[in-house]
Amino acid sequence: MGKKGYSPLIAANARRRKVAADRSWRMDATYINVTGEWVYLYRAVDKLGKTLDFMLSKRRIKTAATGFFARAFEVNGLPRKS
Image 1 (cartoon, helix red, strand yellow):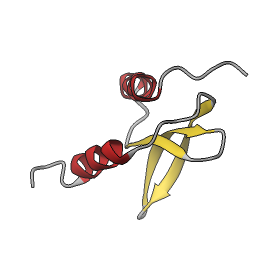
Image 2 (image 1 turned 60 degrees about the vertical axis):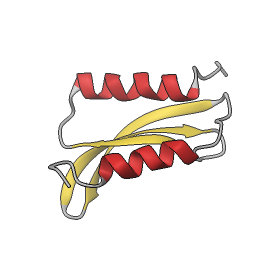
Image 3 (image 1 turned 90 degrees about the vertical axis):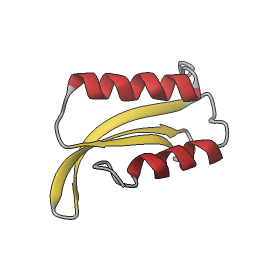
Image 4 (image 1 turned 30 degrees about the vertical axis):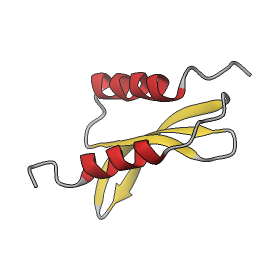
């Protein structure tokens, strides 16, 4: 495995198995501790609480967050306004 390890393979496999999302979903970002290291967690969650997509980042970088949101929209479509 290269520098990125198994993460891209796991993410690609999970996206292939993903079922269609409900048109009502939300996105959020928070700061969490993962194995002793603080990271930013960006996630998209449907109205039933099912995680649609997520991304962990060591830094709070606007371009990374924007890329995550764009990918979430591409994969899940735009959420409807509620």
